[in-house]
Length: 68
Image 1: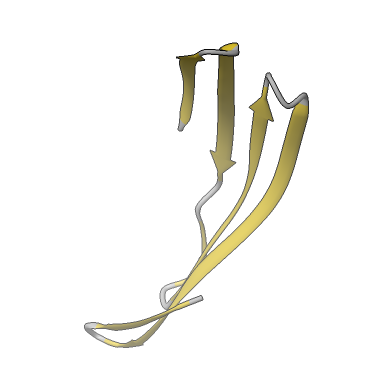
Image 2: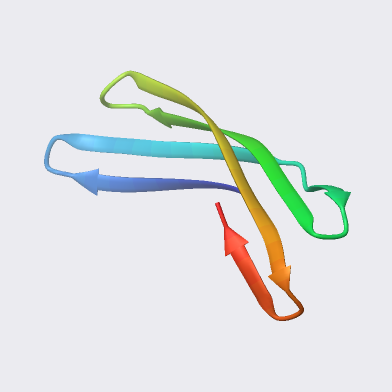
């Protein structure tokens, strides 16, 4: 998922851009892991951010999941 936005204010135009990458991995029938990374950039603030992410699910019963 990628997106970019631009906003105009009295002090000028600034933008915020972001990119994400995720990889779904299912090591067994009951376990699902999704590692990923996200990159953000703010033009007016001259800041960037790089954030690793991890989510997971474990199937407890047929219709019950534990989300991490």
